[in-house]
Length: 517
Ligand code: FAD
Image (cartoon, rainbow, N blue to C red; front, side):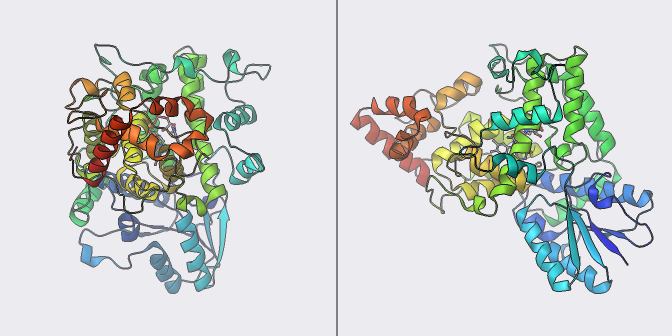
């Protein structure tokens, strides 16, 4: 046989470069559900279903188009699995059948690429890694842009992408509406009445394939966190396209305005919940951006909302991938705030049991759906972990386990970098740290919380607020050198020595678990 084309679980696009010159007689597709990828991190049940069901759907589509697919399906019964790792499954296939070459597109995980290189070398088979054309920006283009830059500011990269791909530009090549950025229009919060009736995204009732996967996951991975009984994500391209159209029609117009707002008991608000479908390549970022721009052009969505949404995909999403591939493998080891390796996420990050209303609300959503929206990730769960001093690699491990859209290239820069400031300023020039005041401003969580958001000491003090002052205090010397932190350090210096003693004492007790929050 000629080529063995590897299709990884997050590469489910029929126009993939790996499938380009596929010869049905001489080539085979190879796909594998494997135990190691599922237990390498202790995955949320919905995350497992969100990968395996679309893989099985894609396998059937490939077979339907005449391709032979060698597919390793995880059996329901744990004892019946053959090899457990991706590499050993591939080695088994290569020992059974001879191929001239392995072809794949760039994987989304540095560790997987390294394992494949070893396996193919040991089996003495050539391996060709092709460009992942799903992305706007190739890794080489990002490296060329970032080379020699002192700081890799997102805004600069985003403008280059807008110009190169001619997105939201007027006929003279200037930014639509005369501005590149409409962030100042995009910081709204819900008033006293809350968000009102936000149109819900479509739900897809599990078909036979998804039901089989759910049964397998519940049997094999029964002790894993989260639930999958409410699984309703798109599992094939047709459903993903419906999901996109629904977002554009019903929620894009308010996306920008309420991007940073939170509200107890709400689920997806005006967020698109499209990250899964895009990360699995069921949708291409280009068609998502084009659909949003078309909505602006036909008057369905305002410019600020459209620009805000485009920035997330053409800006942030491409940017984090560039950071990942130009900085790995060192990036995964960064720990710029010198956090203790033993400091893991709190137990409430697995079971949701906490008195903190903001954490409890984000965890409810996460446990049920393997999703939380950006501001819950960054300014609730990320913030609390950062203030607790959780090691950035441990935070990323937890993130990879709990979110259905987590793939290493996108999780690591966001979790270790943007959220925990583990990279010392590559992703964000200052840490995203705040006290309970921020959460109170952007949500209604503090109204019903057992803790008082504006108190730092005493039994009722908000743990976020106590830990915030302690965090600034612990990193005082480091942050004094950062001009963007000047105001926060000045405010810290207004605290009396006795109040600081009480803050340190309470913070240490929270961190050690002597005070359960
Ligand atoms: P929306 O709010 O509707 O945004 C639209 C789209 O923009 C998203 O679907 C996504 O494709 C893209 N996007 C927005 N922000 C980012 C970003 N910072 N990086 C990359 N893409 C972005 N996103 C993931 O896809 N996988 C992850 O594992 C992941 N980990 C994260 C961890 C932390 C701590 C933080 C703060 C953010 C993380 N993000 C991750 C980015 C972002 O939070 C999610 O993409 C978003 O919340 C997904 O929900 P949505 O589709 O409703 O997004």
